[in-house]
Length: 225
Image 1: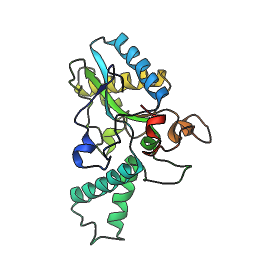
Image 2: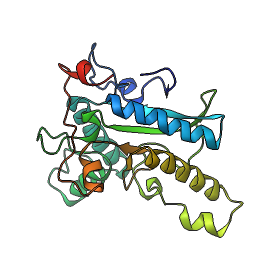
Image 3: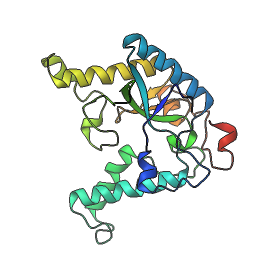
């Protein structure tokens, strides 16, 4: 990853024990995605020279996607007071899985539907100051719920321009603007998630398929940096 792009370390999923292995790094992306991130950062710094993009997560091998998908289900079960294994097949567990699937792609091996982050074409990011302090965006990355929708604060922001909601909405819209101008599309439920060249990007551009497929560890270094 170019040093011009700031990575939020330690990496959150590695800290949880996600199985990247010794040779895989979460800080890898397709070359054209990196190029476009640098363009987006240029747009951002024209708006505010003291800001930079701060990368939270990039490439995920499918085994990491599976680990995080299962982790998210377990955490959501805990938050709802559900015993996952005693509730197998219950409507409560089905509701949990449906909620998780809104935010976490299935760890699919289907080549036509790879998880976005497994392609090297998706990135989770926020805005930070140049000294590495992430800005408050009105919700944490990976928070599962309506608060994570990009436009969650729209009404509150426009009803009170002196509110925190207005500030958070403005920051989310700045992030969307600089990323969109650089060719990315945004996940409809996640203010932090942007894609280029993957299936989400293709759907948003009315294309049948993305031009990036899943990348496994054996060929990752020849495709992504």
